Length: 148
Image 1 (cartoon, rainbow, N blue to C red):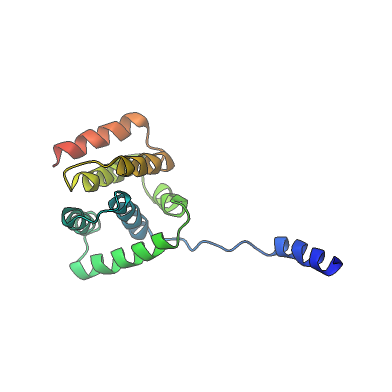
Image 2: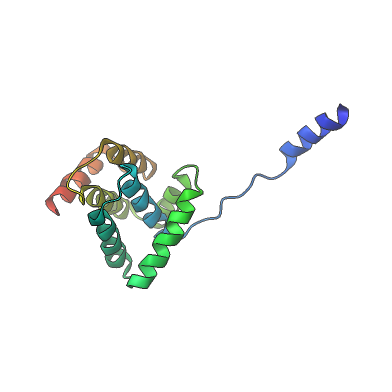
């Protein structure tokens, strides 16, 4: 019995598994993919918007976008929350750039012609993690609707 108790306490002494940090591109792509997946229906317009957005925002080729989305989707599948992605964005982006990312998320959500409540929930949650104010959150939403 003492052996089991000792094993229990030594388990707490083991270092916590570290989360591998993602680069900025992977972090942004993962959050975009999460918005795209939020309504549980994969729309061709959303997929196209994702590809165009990543190509334009990061100046990537088609093959680079494909590799990035594959890596980001894989990272997202293994993630338990959005913190590991938002952390990278917060460390590398200014407030204006974070607002721009929220606008990109809104554009992707609008790509299929409607905003699903689950998409809005995900974007709102991400905006909070990126320290985007409610005023800027709404401004990004309005700006995205004008880009349609």
